[in-house]
Structure formats: structure tokens, C-alpha cells
Length: 397
Image 1 (cartoon, rainbow, N blue to C red):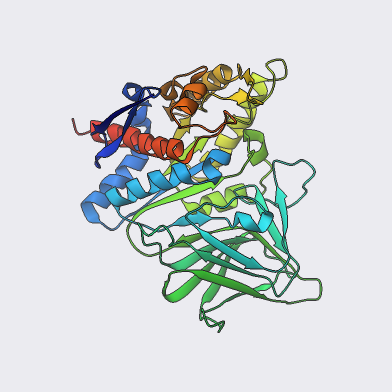
Image 2: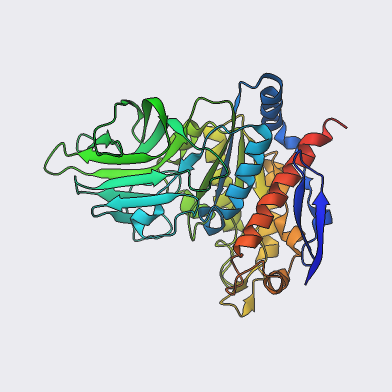
């Protein structure tokens, strides 16, 4: 049930207003070991003092992140506090017949094939998300408009393009709205990363291709839309069905993670890892895979602060409560200690075991008893922002 009065919570530099849901334990919205985010907090301090710094958050997860409701809420709150440093990473999921964030307008032409690292039968190169879109059609094109929200300006003059470059790869063309060729500079950085620079700010992207050989193709792993402005960038890296071990299949993960140059990495995994019977779940297997992923993150961004989030309560097939979550939460706390990471315990915040039914009653969760409603994700984004900002402000008490 919802208390009709609205609660004003002051943790964080922006006031946060939301209904006082009885199913949410607001008093538990604190980071565990928040002082471990020192590198990230130092970056925020530098921005506040000098207004010249770019501060980068990269949030990695599963379907809860792919939809970008949670992360877009946090993104806007952080950018309204510390400046809009750009939209950051995007992947046009429509190319692989999956759901794209509603804050992006995606259009495309031509035939595209999709691969996902969550599927053992899919044998592709994989980038940072574990999603790959490939076309052999030189008449194919992609249009991306990041400015349909209306609340933020995500114009850009630079793109980090994550695509596989070989002698067979199509040459990239950038087009104006009238289909004329747009001037740009295209510089390779590594096997799966190149940078495209524009003379002027762009409010949308229209990418076409030039066929280089009869057997040519273009393989896309995503892109980062960037500008030269100081402020905060919040990358959302999510894939439906992703689990810790699936990210280990992403052969270009480290190269692309390095190019994002993150100051804070938030890792939100565990739901799909635990989606099985108690008899089938292997705590050691989950821990080993999660540890291996953390090692990749640390290798790519050795100075970055790390924040681990615990997965929310959920049911299997809407009928059976998942008893593996407690084991996953315990493993995450142990790994946080091992890697000097902070923890945002969303599982405890939402009420622990069987809480998903209460969230559904309050309109915060969907009928599948796994995912959340748009309002539920927006609430999570606000709570995540507030918990991080509370830890940030504690240093000044």
C-alpha cells in the first residue's frame, strides 16, 4: 500500500521526492563501505572545484540495465548535480530484435544479424555488452537520436565506435539529414575501437557504409556519444539474460572498457546467475565467474572505484520463491571485501525474501515477479543516486 503523503529525502545534493511506499525500507538506503569510492569522489571534487573534469560512471548488468529506466534516472540526477558530460554508451538493440531504451530513437535499414553472449550457440566476436549486430548489406544504415527525452541535451561532437575492424570491414559514412555526406575524421584506436570526430555538434547520428570488397561486412558492438564539455557521463551496459559468466565470453570487453575510462564501475548482476533450483545452484561457480569479471574490470580501469549491488528478490516462473538469492548476496559481500568495493544492498532495501510480491502490490513490480514497473525502476534510480550522494557528503561532516 502507498502512503499518499510524499517524502522529501535530503541525502544527496538534489532533493528527491517520491511516494512513501510501505514496501520500501528507505531507512536502509545506505552504502556499505561507501568510503571505498574515494577515487570517484575525488573526481567529483575536482569537477566542483575546477569545472573542467570529465567524470565517468559505467553501470554493468542484465535486463534491469538494458531497459535504462533505472540508469537513465540516476544519469539525469548525477548530471543535474555535476554537469552534463554527454550521453555515453549506447547500443541499438533493435538491430538484434531486442528492446532499446525508450529514451533513444532507433531506426535502421537493411538486413542485420544478431548474436548474444548469453547464448552458447552464438559464436561471434563480442564487445563490452555481449551484443553484436552484423550486416553484409552495404545499403544498410543506422539512425540514432539520443535527444527525445527533452530533459537533457545530448548533442555530441565525438563518437567512440566499437566495431570489428578487418580488411573486409565496410568503410563508415556519416550522413546529413538530406542524405549528403557529413565531414568527419575517423581514427583507429584498436581492433575493436575507433574514434570519429566532427567539426560541429551533432544532435543525432546517421551512419551508412561503403562496401570495400565483395565479401565485406560491418560488425557493431555499440558506441559512446561524447562531447568536450566537463561534467558526468553515465554509461549503461546491460543485456537481457546476462550473468557473470556470460560477460567472460566478451573477447573485446577489456579493450572497450579501457576506452570508457571509468571513475566508478557499478556491477549489478546475480539475478540470472541464481535463476535455477537450489539443487542446481553452485555458489563457488558464481563466485569464481564474478571474481574473474571483477579482475577484468580492475585490469581495464585499475584506478576506478567499484560498487557492487545486490539483486532484488524474485520468483521462478511466478510460483517458486528463489532461495539462491541469499547465497548470491553473501558472495557479493565477500567479493566486495576482497576487491575493496562498496555495496548497495538493494535486496535488503526492498525488503528481502518475498518482498517482490509487496512491490507488485504497490505497483512497483511486474507480474513476472522478476522485473519492475517503470515506476519501480525510476524509484531504484533515485535511491541509488541518494545512497551514493549520502556517502559523498559524509566526508564533509
